[in-house]
Length: 127
Image 1 (cartoon, one colour):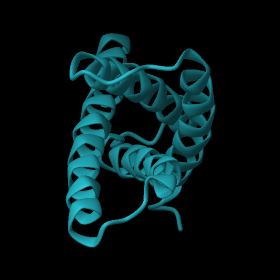
Image 2: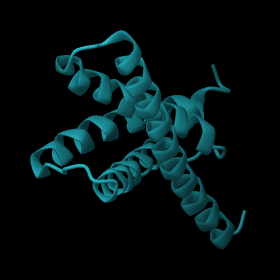
Image 3: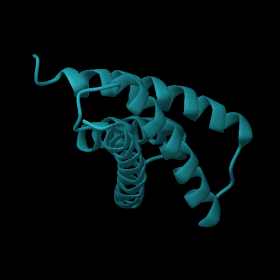
Image 4: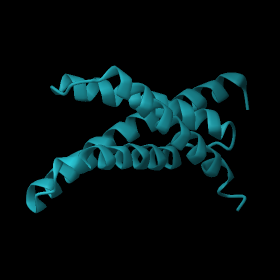
């Protein structure tokens, strides 16, 4: 495969993954808000559920986006970084508050999830 095709594929997969993760995160947050409204879940559960939503969004997006069997850990990490940046920007634009310290925590956790998912994604056919 030529170098430009590899580069386009790499950039395309990571961009697609970041967008998919952001979209999934928005869907999961809306679903969680509905569940909270219906069942009256306390506000103390929100940070834990948000963390689960972020990890799940990254994991699913990595599996959806990565199609070529190279550099899964790097693609997963970049998808996670793109997701954290996009989702933080999106939720900030929608009127939320962004806490700078939380961004680093989210980034670290999402990158770890992305790396693990990327490694699994590129090796899933070998299993």
